[in-house]
Length: 168
Image 1 (cartoon, helix red, strand yellow):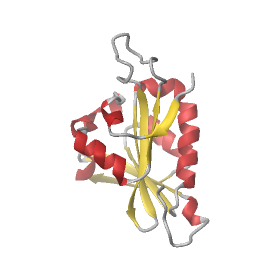
Image 2: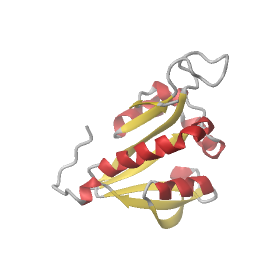
Image 3: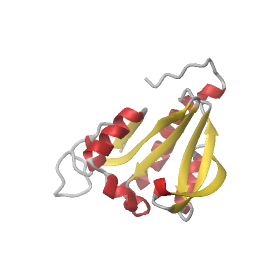
Image 4: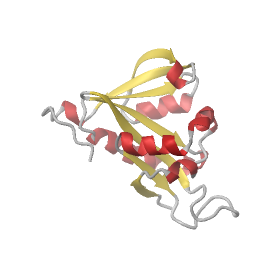
């Protein structure tokens, strides 16, 4: 089954059940945060086609979202990559990885960073599959005082640096 690849909308945040490694973030999943994600930078969703939800009791739009990701510009020429992944994404990770890698490769910035929790082996592996390289280890209040590794990769802006960024 092919997933639907579409622009993220705020309702997608309430339609994803994130993997256990990201469950600590769910208290911040409110309508304000969803709106912030939608407007902060380019972001996208992978969802099962309508009517293919994992639970027999789920409505057509519940639990159909298996991945949300995007990038937030944080300084000139740089963006922070982020993702929320459901355990249900497992069978679709090849498609998600290919399209996510292409998305990050087209970003009009020179540097893209992402943070991966130190003990999350699958997250480290996936960051490397997306072309990121480990940069440093850190702990920050922004990530719940949990130790993380910072990864970085080049974006399309490194090749076509014309001083302008377009997030369209």
